Structures are given as C-alpha cells and as structure tokens.
Image (cartoon, rainbow, N blue to C red; front, side, top):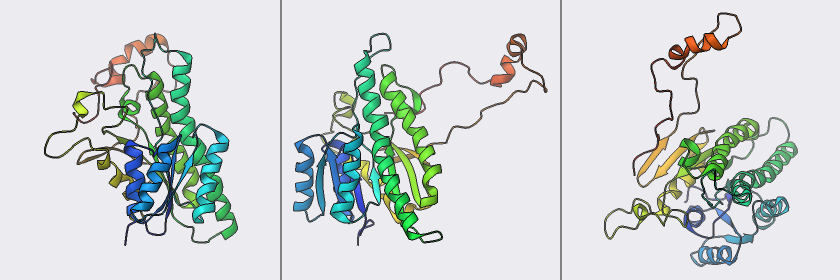
Length: 296
C-alpha cells in the first residue's frame, strides 16, 4: 500500500527534471497523476508511468494561461473523479542584472512562476470550495494538499535574479495566504525550495553527477518530501517552507520581528531615528544579510 493510494494529483512542469521525479514517485505511491507541461515531454512521462503500472494522463498547456489552468484541474476531475493534490513546480530562469534586464525577460519569468502557481491553485480552490458546499456544514471534508515551489533565491535574494527571486519570494507569501484562506476546507499549503541538478542548474559544474557515491543533486532526492507533504501523515503541517537537497531537509523560520523601538507615544522625527539607529539594530549587522542557505 502506497502513502497516496486513492489520491489524485496534478504536477505542473512535469515533463523533465524535478517535476518528472515528483510525478513518478506520486504514481509509485499510488496516486493517479495528471502530468502537465508544454510539449511532447508530458506525453512521454505519462506513457512511462502507465508502462510502469501507474495511472497517469498528460495535459499539455501553459500554467500562465487562465483557461489552460482551468482545463488542467478539470482534466483531473473528469479523468479520475476528483483532485486531492496540486504540486506547483513549473518554471524557468532568464537571469540578468537589474541594469541589463529587459521587460520581456522580467515578465516571462514572473508570469510562469507567480501566475503559474496561482492559476492552478485558484481553480483547485474553486473545486474544493464547491465540494465543501455540496457536502454541507460540519461534514468531514477530504484532505487536500498544495505543494508550492520557491527557491533559495526567493528566500535570500540571488544576484542577477530580480525577476526569478522576486517571483519565488512572492510564492512564499502566496503559500501563507492560501494556507490561511483554504484551511477551512481541509487544505494544507506548504512550500519547498529544492536544490538539485535540473536544466536550470546543470550548467554549474558543482551540480555535476559524481562518478561514484551518493549523488547529492539527483533531482529524485527532492520528491520524497513532496510525497510526504501530500500524504495524510502531514495533515498537521501547514504554511511551512523547507529547503530540500540531497539527504537534508531544512525547515525555515517564518518572517518574524527581530527587534523593536518605540517613540513613547510620539511621532518619530528624523533626528530621533538617527539617534535610535543603534538601538534599532541592537548591535546586529545593518547591511546586506549573509546568504542563509546550507553550503554547497
């Protein structure tokens, strides 16, 4: 018996890399899977999963397209009867420094990551809310899951990624918003920041596959965390973010107040803030924060 028997899942950007690994593992754990990507790779992954004994169909389309996102959610419902799990994974990078980035470069990356996460989540939420209404107040609602994908650039701010990092940072906030909105419908929303060898990272020699030993950056290392968060065992985990790489999982603290100063019931003045600067930072650094991620 797999951890996801009887569940229905959508994985976006599942035609290759991390997304493909997610789809394959969810299917191996018993879920029926709708594989989404732009082209023929989606069909290829679906056929491979079916050949291995899983239940899977492909649904081509861009997650940035509102009607395509609606069709994606509807495909899961029509094909397998419901939708329990949405894994938002689709994305790409178009890096550039702020002084050289072009408008299309910015818009395309923000679109696929930010709108591409929200559009499928919107239509999943519409379906789950409708089901809850049909079941009536007080009914035991089915457990639903959304797993979002941010990045360490979204957490810490990577140079040359004002488009990508900003979109991934937006996904962190979207995770919190959706978790607060949808918990009443028994939906949990969590977020992972994967570090793995993908078409986006494989140009970096540090991500190269080793000739022997544990392959730290194998994209398949990420998927067990996704399957876990999608399972009933994770029903009490909500609005959380995890960096996942190799054999490591790092749970991140949510944003919190670091220090506070008060004007004693009076409006602050510029002079007063200048005088209180040291108190404001409490002896801690006031410059660019250090990169807070795990070492390579």
